[in-house]
Image (cartoon, rainbow, N blue to C red):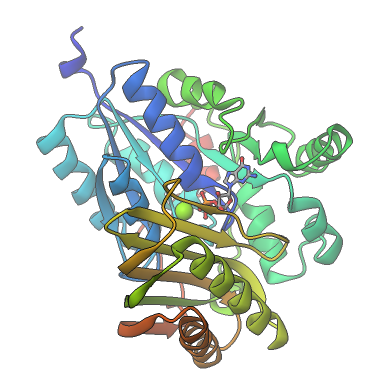
Length: 378
Ligand SMILES: Nc1nc2c(ncn2[C@@H]2O[C@H](COP(=O)(O)OP(=O)(O)O)[C@@H](O)[C@H]2O)c(=O)[nH]1
Ligand SMILES: [Mg+2]
């Protein structure tokens, strides 16, 4: 059969906020395009309307569609409409989709409904769930993932328990015994899964995920029911913030230093308010290229990536996305006041175009197909 007549592969890469989904998707997309000559499209997804992930994916030259203001499961029809539009426009071989990192229950609300109702249009790859190797054991010590009484622990454990392929990412940051201990913990949570170890950042093990995306077949593994109340508690604990700013400086400023120091100070401010930092991301687009950085609760250093040999720039557009366990008003105030003082320090004039912070609405999936219904069809 010619490629053009084949159903496109559709792969979802889920996992908690900051686990490396966007980084991995971009790597996988690059390999598929450059080494396999595949046409690749991406669907990004988050709570707000100004999405850092989309800005980054566009820089890579991928055709993207965005599902904003809520997760795929609560916007199932929007997701399908976008995916179908991409099919018409681009006829991609592969669609890579990144669900919101605070989303659990992808199997009953998204994956299985697509398999049931859209099997003629998409060929689903196994559900891939990413885990941050540098963070999961620390989180497990703080909020036991095995008993999962804490709502965020419940959310993370639920994500892992429905993965068909569990990808332990960021292994460049940990040693061998930590990887083994991490795999032991994950196997307790999800003994049936296939396990892959990667460093998306340094392109280690990514080929294994490419294989899953291109050729993997869902084994229809059992998946747990989602306790919607507990899941909702976790979603609601984490406020969303997005902000868009114009930055200028007559004498010029160092873009990398500015976003690094701003992010470090935002981190300090949030921690001083007692907030749990799920993920904060900044993206600065300048006429000399784009600079980005992000931080999670267990990061010690902010690493900025962007074009090398650019010392000074004089203007840019700054995007900030945050998901933090803190009141939305406090979060907005902490980010905006920190940016203001950091701008002053760097001789930057910062003009807010817009910023918004709120608790996402309680999740209301459009479909819910429990495993018991799938099982009865065998
Ligand atoms: N050291 C290291 N950092 C990584 C790796 N993958 C992602 N990151 C970093 O982790 C942070 C979160 O990554 P991102 O892809 O935005 O996570 P997402 O929220 O799951 O989409 C970013 O600063 C990435 O550069 C990895 O394999 N190793
Ligand atoms: Mg992302």
